[in-house]
Length: 560
View 1: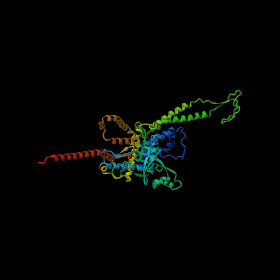
View 2: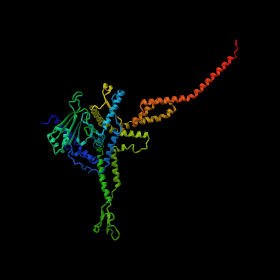
View 3: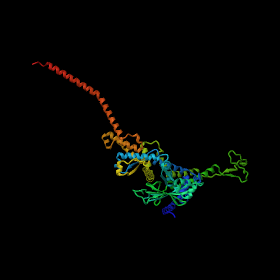
View 4: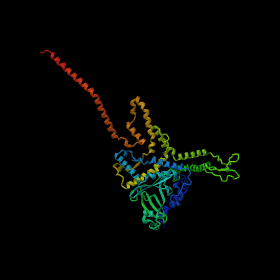
C-alpha cells in the first residue's frame, strides 16, 4: 500500500507535469533552432526523467542560420558580465537599519562575511561561474533557468544548472516559487552510491551485478514543510524527499532546508503562468523565417553557380560535360549559335539578403545585442559621454537585470549564507547584531548597478563644470558645496567602479593634509627668516645707537 505522503506528492507531480505540457512544444521549437544541444523536451517521458538518449546525437537538422544562436551566446555572456562578473565583488551585505550600519564592528563583520561568500563561491569545486552562465543562457532561450545550490559533505557549496526539461515548478500565493520537483535518472550504480540500502531490492541487485549501468527514474521533491517551527527541532522551512519511481518508494527523507535550495532566472511571466518567456519566444517567428530564407538562399546560390542547361532537341549533345575546361564538340551550329545555354533564374539575391539582414537585426535587438554594443560603437568618447551611454544602457536593461537580482541572485546568496552558518564558517556576531538581530540586506555593486548610478555621476561633473567660472568670479560661492572635494572624488570613484585600494581612507587623507599644512608652515617660516633677521639686526643697531646717544648726553651734563 502506497504511503499517504507519497501518494500526495505523486498526485501533485502529475498535475505539475500536465501544466507544463503546454510549454514543451514551444521550448522544443526554440531549442531546435537556437540551442540545439538542449532540444530534448520531447524526451521527458511523462515527468519521470529524460528517456535514454544517444550520446553525441545530432540535433542541428533544423538550424540553417546561426544568428539567433550567436545572439544567445552574447546574451548569456553579457548577463554574466553585467550581473556576476567573476573578477569583481558584485555585491555586499549591510544591516537593514542604517544607524546600526554606522557601527564599525558591524561594518567589519559584514565585510568579512562578504569575503567568505566570494571565497566559497569561486572555489574550483563550487563551479559557480559556468553554472550561472548556463542559467543565463536558459533564461534567454526558454525564459526560465533553474540552479540547484547543494551542500556536499566534504566538498562544501556546489552549484548545478539543471536542464529545464527536468524541472517542474509551483508558486505560492505571492508569486514566489516555493515548490520544485526534479525528475532525473540515475544508473543503478549511481543510485546505490547516493541512497544505499534504502533503494528497492531490484535496483540494489542491478547495482551489484552486470546491469549496474541500467538507468532508473527518480524524483527530488522540495516543498514547504507543514510542520515548520521557527524554534525547535523542526526548524526547516522546506521538506526534501527522494522518490524511486519504478517501485514508488521514498528512498531518502531528510530534515530539509532552512532556505530554498533552488534559484531561478525568469523573464516575462504572464498572469497564471509559472514558467517565463524569454527573448527567444518573442522572435521565434523571425528565427523560423530566417532559417527558411537561408535555405532558399542556399538553393538560389547553388542554382546561380550551377544553373540548369538548356539543350537542343536533336540530342546531339547527349554527352554534354559540365566540368571545368571540358570540351563539348558540336555545341555550336553552322552559324556559330550556341546549342546549349544556362537557364536564367531571374532571382534577386540582393533583395533576399536585405530581408535576411532585417530579420537578423530584429533577433539581435531581442537578445539585447545592440544594447550591449552601445559603448563599443564609439570608443573615442569623453568621460561624460561614457557615463551618459552607461546611463542609457542601464535604463534599457533595468527590468531584465532587476528581476535577476530579485529572483535569482537573492535566493542564491540566502542559501549560501545558510550553508556557511550551519558549517560554522561565519565569524561570531558582534554585540550590536546580537542585540538587534542580524537583519541583513544586499547591496549590489555590479557593473549594471554602477551604470544605474551614472546619472548621478553626470550631475556631479556637470555641476562642477558649471560652477568653476562662477567660483572664479566669487570665491565665496565655493562654500555652497557641502563637505570637501575628497567626498566628491570618492563618490565619482564608486560610480566609475574604481578599485577601493587606489583611494586613501579618511585617516590617511587627514594625515596627508596635516603633513601638507606642516610643510607649508615650515616653508613660510623659512621664507620669513631673512626678513626677521634683518629686522632683528636693525632693532639691535637702533638699540646700540640709542645707548650711545644716551651716554654722550650724560657726559655733557655738568656736575653739581
